[in-house]
Image 1 (tube, one colour):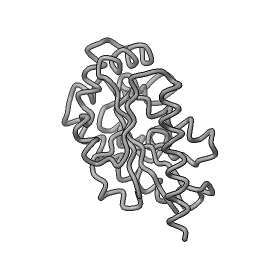
Image 2 (image 1 turned 90 degrees about the vertical axis):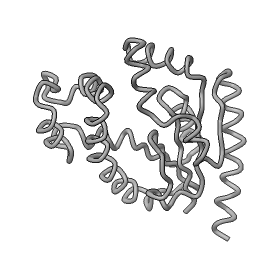
Image 3 (image 1 turned 135 degrees about the vertical axis):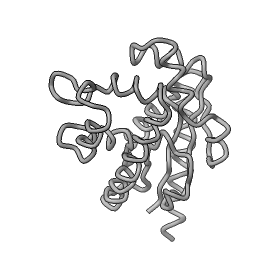
Amino acid sequence: MYCVGLTGNIASGKSTVASFLKSKGITVISADHIARDLTKKNGLAYKKIINRFGESILATSKEIDRAKLRQIIFSNPEQRLWLEQLLHPLIREHIVELLPHSRSPYSVVEIPLLKDRRVYPYLDRVLAVLSDQQEQIRRVIKRDNCSKEEAKAILLAQPDDAERIAIADDIILNNDSLEVLKEQITNLHQRYLQFAADKTL
């Protein structure tokens, strides 16, 4: 099985990359989606999060209000670290469980906070999606309806471009049109198909 790790900051365009590859028939496993399942009511991490942060982070439905939780963790590095240490091992376990079920020529694992390849030993290659920071801030404000200060705090909490470049085998620069982005993805998709075929020989 050939596996590509997909990473990038919030609003860099990595989800667009993932969606495009999915449309090509590639299995995409999202760490963010797994995290949402873990933190849903009755999810494996739900009670521990409520015990840590209190019921004030709950919506009327008793689900965790992600906006409230986000405000806490992005203004307090200690709280953010606690949450990451709770969720990341559980996310990794779920990824390992899901990968063998993939039937596509290669698989993509979307990991926004990928910092250390050693904890994901099954990754054959890492693709980093980078974008201009001011453009990212603009996208976050528009998408999440948050303030500029909140958007900046979220970006500051994530690995910077130098860290991503250091672990990446391939890089997509997403500062142009959607057409340019799709062209870059298509070229990499063809390469990954070949790499996957070579690995099975």
